[in-house]
Length: 319
Image (tube, rainbow, N blue to C red; front, side):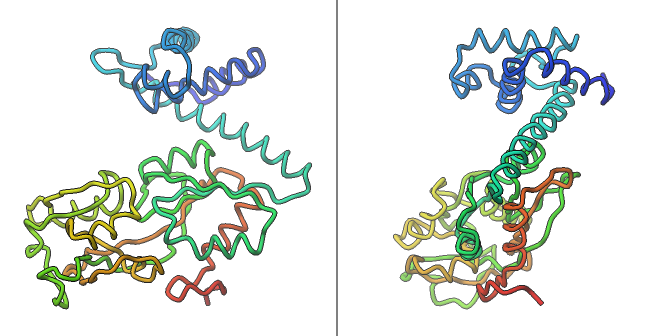
């Protein structure tokens, strides 16, 4: 089933004109259900009763004249629901952007810059320089997996995203920040500690400390092993990515470690070994929505990040 863009927009405009904040709240609730595809978890996140949330979804479907979810077995967003979700995200994002633009204009300031990233260790230098140069700017930093970034940019929940893996979605603009090798971190007393390089085949059977599924570090590990029809032996999955190096140093396993982390002043003791594979690399990229209007604060942050000299940590502009 398909909907005309003008039809969807007219419905959203009618809801906004006639329903006010109550109807906007209903649309926001729909987005949470669409993201989680689970009524009880959505109700918990929204801090409302599940029956009330169910009535809200039913009312939206009645207004549209079509179901938004498939209810055979697990709740699933259907094609109509996906189309509606995309337009609702953009429409509510534009409303929020309008509020921020008015606030920026009336306060005579540069506003707020909102940045999402898979890791902030990489961004410490440019963010510190940005804050020193623009102390009045409010900075919001949010951790986000790469697979959520396109949606969050489209919905204007954030202004900028930094990912260590490609985001291949239409409607985004990007600037590559740097590319670097990723090696293996091992404890000081590990049998591989004296090696100058190591192959993926030699790592088979080794205990790995890594991030959870979806994180770029885990995806790279799985991809390297899958290319050789191998499966990594994972003994620890950590949500605390800064703790991975400490766990490796403590002797709990080995793990992939980007070259950038070796420059950290707080890095744990251990040995970093290059992997004998041209695919053992990461490419760090800054993304923003092609359709959104960036605030002055966000544009200044984009300039600082893209102008950073990543190999040396120098804040001067790139040549």
